[in-house]
Length: 150
Image (cartoon, rainbow, N blue to C red):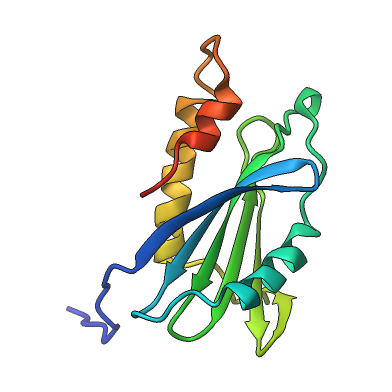
């Protein structure tokens, strides 16, 4: 038997912050914070602006509804912006940016989102399926945007 000496998992506070229009897209913005510190909104605003440069314009005829979400993750060892948008009807392009002091940069090859970010991603997957991909005749965009993780 191999016993790994990893830090045991512990929940982190996840908050829905807002729906924000960025360029041609509407993004649900979440925060994840390690410990009890407040989210550094000023720092993460810079990161979100940097990450938003990655979002293509919405084009429903090409399967890009102009919907997505971002996770502002104030972690134990660093700060991350995880940016995701729906594309090709059912795909989720994802970009990750990290802060080196006050500067934000794209993730390196060995840097990725983590188990806490995956909780938001799983919720958003389910919300997208239940609304936009439901096949129902209703305002699926509004339904998606109001379906948030609490």
